[in-house]
Image (cartoon, rainbow, N blue to C red; front, side, top):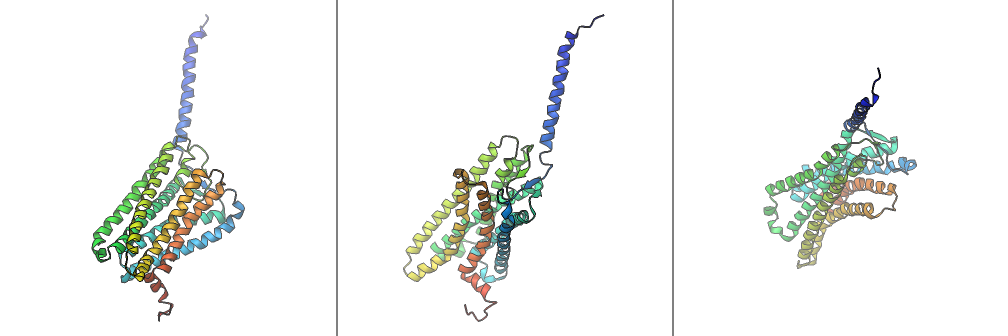
Length: 341
């Protein structure tokens, strides 16, 4: 009795197709479900591995300077009643944010330089990414608040304490914190939705948004647009408002009757202008080199990015310590009690 095998061919093809689909589904499910199970590996600065040990030495020194300088600023501002003013309150916020920035990235950086590539968990990488970008957003907003403080101090000196009341300062602080959080927190969800089925090696010293997204095996166009447009728009708007503030400040200064009054007003703004230049100049340079500097080596991009993270937190307390008389006096007084400075 013969069996017609032709009748079984559609059925066999169906079962083979189902097994193929099931195997692909299992593989896809495995890739999607295990994308964050393995750790990322931070390589450091590719191409400069032989110099990592030497590069780590200045980064360690810069980190110690940032840690000591900002801690001293916070201690002085909290302990000295004469420094309980809006200007120094915003300065203490800047110092605290710089401490967060330094401790988020720099210790991991010089550990990579001295101990080689380091592992970091997916949740640890997201945490580092969030606090890195959050600190930058906070710094920009704090510098805008300090520009407003200087505008009120120079243009409305007699109304300074009535305009910048405790309630107004509290609202400004809440606006700074909430705006920075709302800008950066979506990046966490934009990254958590991505499947990471490729290599988890990051050619950098720390985790940042686009650097993590580029490791995904899915479309990251939303990450690219959000990661570029929102921070740039935020920083650009802050820069425009800071520019408007200082235009009004300079106009008010040059309308003052005496040269001594103009010099004193300029001195009160000098340290803030220096900090603004230190913060925004490397940021704009980094954005422009990433956008147009395609012929610049990748190692140069990473090195400048690390300097951008390490140097401003170290220089800010030095600038304010040197150029702000109230802080300079409090630092020097223990060493020269008679005021011989």
